[in-house]
View 1 (tube, rainbow, N blue to C red):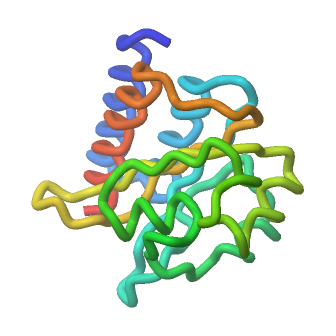
View 2: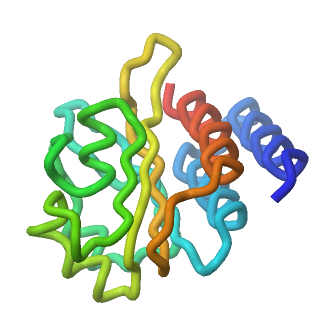
Length: 165
């Protein structure tokens, strides 16, 4: 995926913010852009920290409602999943294999039932470094994200932070 694609998706998101488009629609736009960047039938998800510090669905167009209900209200925790760990640590977290990662012991059945084998997540931060949520990507293969994928989703995460701020 070219930098031009990412730039155009970010510009569209910025225009949506300027036009007062609903936050959910902006976040959905960004998750769909991430899915295009990563390809391979990936599913992206933005989880947003609520006022109580719990992770809530911001936009996850390819994930079923029962999956989203099962993960709704997770607390940021460095030892749980990929997104909860990214929210807790403020760092990118990569899960190469749900079967082999202890952080997924209680939850691995959820993504595995959907055919996902691994995931990675970036924290969404405000300009002061406060975590606002996470930008997760589920994969149907066991692999690290490429540097181009990371760079692209980082740019989308910056746009998500502006939508959430």
